[in-house]
Image 1 (cartoon, one colour):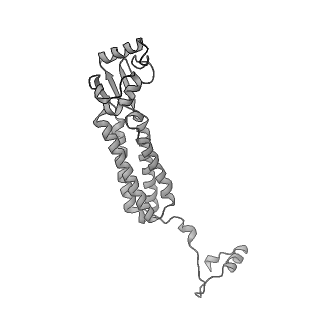
Image 2 (spheres, one colour):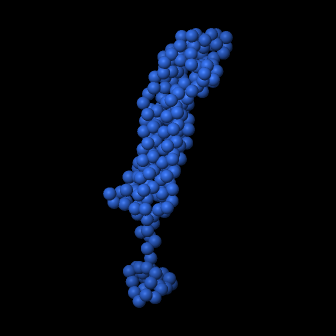
Image 3 (cartoon, helix red, strand yellow):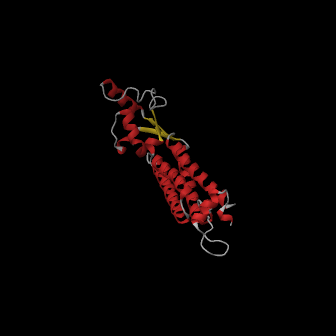
Length: 223
C-alpha cells in the first residue's frame, strides 16, 4: 500500500469508528419489561397525580407496549457521544500533524476506543443500573438501582451495545495502526516546501532575483 493510500485508509477508518459510536449512542439499547406490580404501582401514582401518565401505558416515546420501557444509548451509555466526537476531531489534526504528533494522535484514538469499549461493556454488565435514570424519568419511581431489581420482569438487549463495542475495537486497531505507520505517511505540505536554496554553482540563491524570475514567468527552482 502506498503512503498516500495508507494515510487515506487510516483517516477513513477513524471517521467510520467515530460515526458508528455516535450512531450506536442514538439507537435503542434495551427494552425493560416491568412486572405487573410495577405497572400497577405506576397506575396508582398516576391516579393520585404522581407519575407521568404516558410512561407505562405504551403511549409516548419512552415505551414500547404496556409496561415496556425503551432505553437508548443516550441514557444507557451517555459518554459515548463525547468520545466519538473527540475521535472525529483527530481526523482534522491528522491532516495537519507531523510524524511525531501523528503517533501521539494514534495512541490517543486507541485510548478513546478503549474508553468506548469500557463504557459499552459496563452498560451491558448491568443494564438496569445503566438504565435507572431513564426508568426513573419514565415512571416517577426512585432512581435507586437496587429498588428496581424486583420491578423488572425481563430485559431485551438490542445489537447496538455490541456495535458500540465493535466500534471501540475498530478505534483501538486504527489508532495502533496510525501510531505504527505514521512515519511512512507523506510529509504534510512537502510538495510546497521544497525550494532550491542554492544555485548550480553552490552559492546561496538571491531572493530578489527569484522574485524577478517569477515576474518574468520563469521558475527559479529550475535553475
